[in-house]
Amino acid sequence: MDNQETQPVKNLYQRISAVMADIQYLQKDDQVGSGNYGYKAISIEKVTESVRQAMIRHGLVIFPIEQVHMMEDKARLNNQGQQVLVPITTVDVRYKMVNVDKPEEFEIVVSSGTGTDPQDKGVGKAMTYAYKNLLLKTFAIPTGDDTDKTHNKELEEQQNKAAAKAAEEAKKPMSDPQRAEILEWLKDPAQTEETIKRVTGKMDKFTKEEAQKAIQFLKKQVAEKAVTAAKTKANAA
Image 1 (cartoon, rainbow, N blue to C red):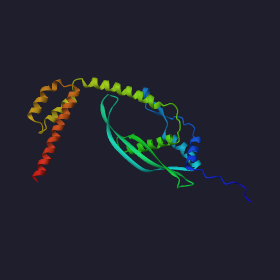
Image 2: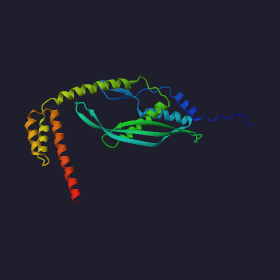
Image 3: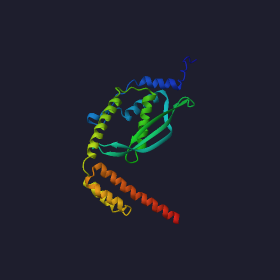
Image 4: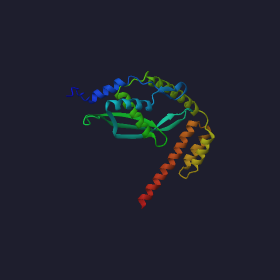
C-alpha cells in the first residue's frame, strides 16, 4: 500500500506568491540615454526570462486577451531646442493569468504602456513596456533605486534649458530658408493683394518666430481657399 501523501494542488494565489518568493530582486542591466541624462533600467529580456522560469516551475501562464491602442503626435523639444512632433503610441492590455493545473482558476490583470517610433513599431514597443510593467508590478519585483524620479528631474531640467534656448533662437532674425518659403507662398493665387502687401511690408524685420507664424498664416490661406473652391464645385454639381 502506498502511504505517500498526495500533495495538495496549489491555488492561483499560492503560485503567484511562490513566483514572488523565487524572484527576490532583479538588478538593472540596461543603459538608457547617455551623459547627464542617461539612467539605468532593466531590460525586457531579463525580466521575461527570470519570470518565465519561475512561472514554469510553479505552473502559471500569462497571455494577452484584449488590446486597445491609441496613437497621437505630441510636441517635444529636440536637442537643438526646436519643437518637433513625436508619434506616441499608448496601449491598454488585458491579460489572463491561469493556474495550469486548474485552468478554470484565473485572474484578469491589466497593464498599460507607451512607445515611440516614427514608423510602424510604436504598438510593439508599447506592448513590450506594458508586459514588462505587468510582470514587475504583479510579482512585486524590486529593481533598486527609483531612478525614474531622478530621470524625470533631469529631463525637466533639459526641457527647461531647451525651451530657453528655443525662445532665444526665436528672437533671432528670420533665416534665408524662411524668407524663401514666405516668398514662395506669396506667389500662390490664394493670397490676396492685402495679404501680400502686409507681409512684404514687414518681412524684412521678421524674427524667426514671426516668420514661422507668417508661413503658417499663408499656408492656412491657401488651404481655406481650396476648401471653399471644393464646396462651390460640389454645390454646383
